[in-house]
Image 1 (cartoon, rainbow, N blue to C red):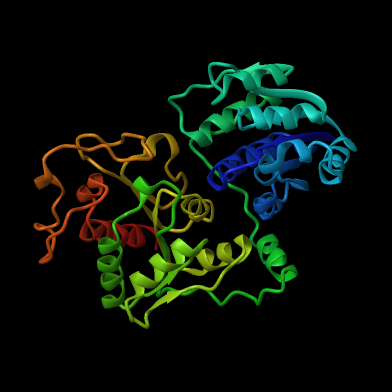
Image 2 (image 1 turned 180 degrees about the vertical axis):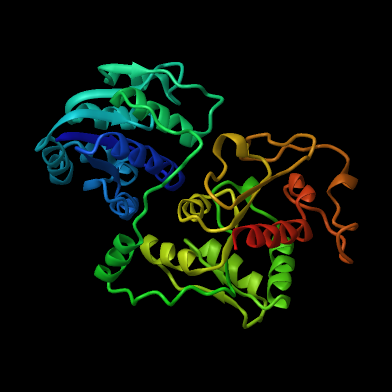
Amino acid sequence: MLRVLIVKVSSLGDIIHTLPAITDAKLARKDIVFDWVVEEAFTEIPSWHPAVERVIPVALRRWKRTLFQTLFNSEFRNFRRNLKKQHYDLVIDAQGLIKSGVVSRLSSGLTIGLSDKAAREPLATVFYNKVYSVSWEDHAVERVRELFSRALQYSYDKDHIDYGIDLSLVLKIAGEQGSERDPPKSDRTIVFLHGTTWATKHWPMEYWRSLARHAVDCGYIVLLPWGDEAERHRAEKIVAGNTDIIVLPPLSLSDLALKIASAVGVISVDTGLGHLAAALGKPTVSIYGPTDAALSGTVGNNQVRLSSSFPCAPCKKKKCSYQGDPKLVSLKDECSASFAITPPCFSKLPPDLVWEEFQLVLEHSS
């Protein structure tokens, strides 16, 4: 048996990006077994893949608030002890950050990572025994697949991608959490993934409301998940009293995965949950303004990635600095109301276009 430890602690999208590499490795090496160190908020995701045997939670986000105290408390000592109880044939840091490099060095085994020219934080390489270089021009999913294939010495089919999520494992975890069995697949339910981290990645509220009207007029029921209070308030504004638009209750990742899996399709901004929809193979239209879909967009079957053609897109900035012609960012030509679109790059991706593309991807997937 070849036992490998994966260190990919966050975030949601990055963790999902790692799953195809695990599938590749398992196809090439039947004797391989993975353990995975991951942030405590995301421990459900590695458990969805049958090639992952043990998930080791870490609380780096919480610990950094009181770093000095953490180094001497029992929780951190227990984490180190839990990490070292198994000797690994290989430890792969698939993240390329200093924090993931530190975690990989705390383990027992030969540490592998990205070279200083390929890692997001070049100093992370001081924690590795061996490094590999992958291209910055490749998509994030491809970069991880390439790293795993070189570290474990196998070839893979770049034209085929399989995230390897076993829905029976998702259902099992949801059941262990006390959740009810998810309803049967519905051909009239759509999930809108409206929540994201950067302010510049938020599609305008007026657009979501217009898109919801399109969906309801076509006989669909719209589900709106949320992760924090700001997202819940946004979801409630999208509803605007329409009983065919439903704000979901708080859900675990496994419960939300089941909701997405049972829907007919998904419309999403650039968010980790959009990558989950792609991993589940759901017909999805994803909307990209300031970010580059070629490097970090959804990858998989039935995926449509809409990128803005606005002059400064993709700027890859968390704060919009556009100072150009205000006429470029008016909604006047798209509907009867007239208001500025913020951020302006989304003026090139109005609701009518998104809905048209969604209808096409549904047709092609059926």
